[in-house]
Amino acid sequence: MKIVFKIKEDDARNPGVIADCTGDNAGDSVGPSADGFETYGVTGVALISFILLAVHTPLAQVQLLVWIFAMRVMMVVASGFSYFLNAAVTKARYQTADHMNYEAPLTTLVWLTSLVSVALTFLASWLLIPTIGGDPTLWWKLSLVITCGTLAGAIIPELVKVFTSTSSRHVREIVTSSREGGASLNILSGFVAGNFSAFWLGMTMMALMAIAFGISTTGLGTLMLAPAVFSFGLVAFGFLGMGPVTIAVDSYGPVTDNAQSVYELLMVDVEIKKDFLARRSSRERQKSLDLASSNAQRTHRPIGHCP
Image (cartoon, rainbow, N blue to C red; front, side, top):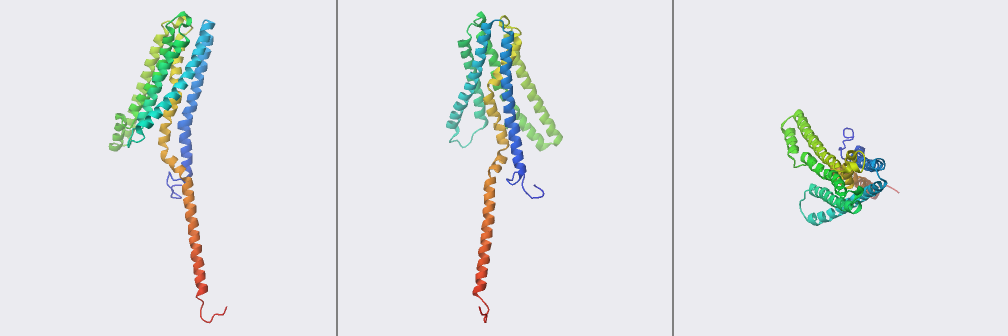
């Protein structure tokens, strides 16, 4: 299209734009959303199965099942509440501003959701399982395990920003390498930043899971078999509890990445109408000129001509 028809890559008349936008947005937005939803459901089913198989007493099974379902509903409510609260605050703060940092509202949303979820987790646990298994301390221990996962949903984006934000030192280093060095230096800089990013993300998850494992050794064994497995499941449960907000924040990347192409797609109708009207006006103008020319020819006939 670019070579034969001399059309730009992001031109609305280039069908490749439609394929590019569809593929990018499907892969970057719909794909992670579907994967997150699938993991979200599988984790809940796994925990329910574990409770039914590993918990010793039927009463504790019922209490934990009610607690798990209440936690899931509570986290969705917390995500929705935090989203609308953050939207209202952001609108009031930036509606008349000339400049704004687009990453700031997203960061605020993640941390607000995390803090609200943690607070509601402890409150709901205290109300639902204050003395589960005869132990008055298990409610806050289980809440603390879920909190490890909830905090992971807030800490990991911060670590990702360290290596991907436009104001990040690592990003500026890659830009400098691209400007001053060749392709090899650019690739090496990217590898360094990527390896550092994976290292710190892995260390964070390992530390949070170690905390959850330590808590699982402080009394959960009297309530169920393999308490460490249940604790690791609760960490994943808390991490995925912020799924709605995580998906909303992650969608910012694909949308901005494809903003130019999306704009071009939105202008397809405008371009077609403009081109059609231009051609129609050109044809009408040519018809008018032809009509005027024929009238002029009929008006100025040669002398001696008889009709």
